[in-house]
Image (cartoon, rainbow, N blue to C red; front, side):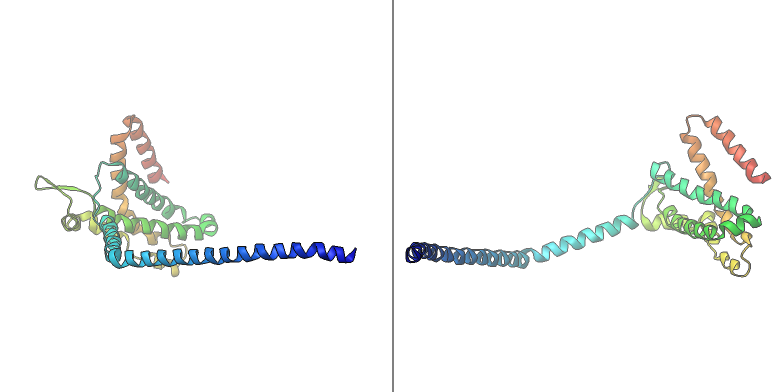
Length: 228
């Protein structure tokens, strides 16, 4: 029986070897085909880069320069929504300074919210700094023609009194807090930016469906600031 078992398994072993003999060349052929395809792909990529590489790099550089150009050469409409939304943010900074300069006189507020006060100071100072740039991108009517050129808009803005107020507003008077931490009046020059708050009120009144109600709210807010 043992000899018979060996006799039965020997043909099976031979059959497996024959299958492997046919299978191994196919594997080698498949590997060679993949290697050839990879080589052709790399060769094609190299040829494409050699022929069009300069044009591709030039196109990328042109797109990059176009993006930079649009960042610094855009022009905003003074009556448009993007400028109005930005003005809302600047007006929020003006209201913050109006309220906090007075509020931090109280010891409880100073002791509990001093670090939050410094963080918001920095945040709104950045907003005011960016606003200087934004205000140089507002289209103006000059000589009966709408000016949109970058240098022309910059020159028109620099000649205004508001530009001087913007610069005085950002003087680093906050450094006085290093000498006296509760000297909230060190940010008093930030109130020079409040002309933008009046611009926000004018733009909002033009858009308000109930302008009389808005004027009432503005009056209440003014009284609140004056009396408190």
